[in-house]
Image (cartoon, rainbow, N blue to C red; front, side, top):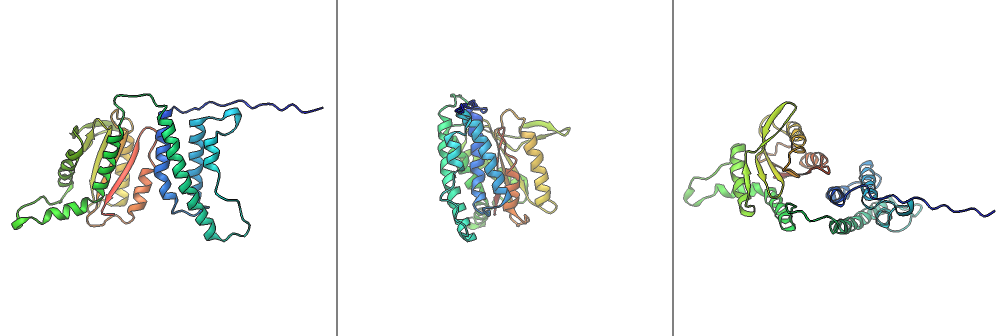
Length: 279
């Protein structure tokens, strides 16, 4: 007797287009760091598995099978070659990740077409302004050094403490953003209230500023900023947190590690960007 082939049930997407876009943007941000990892590094495997799960949630499983976008993402370039040397595996890993970068960007664009219009949604222009802000903050040390050299040795703003840095950053924010609010109250965390440094209301973005000093290095900064992320997650006007750390004396031993550790706290509720200058 011939066997009857049963068709599997389709699974609908479990994520809204907006939430899927936010999660895929987070994974895309993290992709660059995976290029430096070995092809068999557990951290890379975790990143890939998480991204696949997001894609299942974004596109569902037509007829019970993975969506074509998901299978295209998982598919690697070239077949497995027995005895292929390790450096060739690594080259293929980089090729695959660059291909996945292009695919994720395309998927995000597809999903954005499905997101309903919202008057308060961050526009592409505002998104570009935030990227420009991060670039400027990454070069803040050069800006601070240039301020020291004035005509006829006139007085200037020295970056002696966090308040000096806040004043300088506020001036930079005014170049690109119309609504810059200082010293906004935040919801309490662990029974304690606090105040944010700057809120870009229209962009739903908070700027938190730190300046390293004796007793405020990698560990202490990490602990403070982890608390900040937890606090801002429940703030109604914060969808992105930009943590700017000014480290003129190079007190941070591993800037890339600190940045990576903190940005891993990004979720569908909040995107965390960390800028350290100089790095």
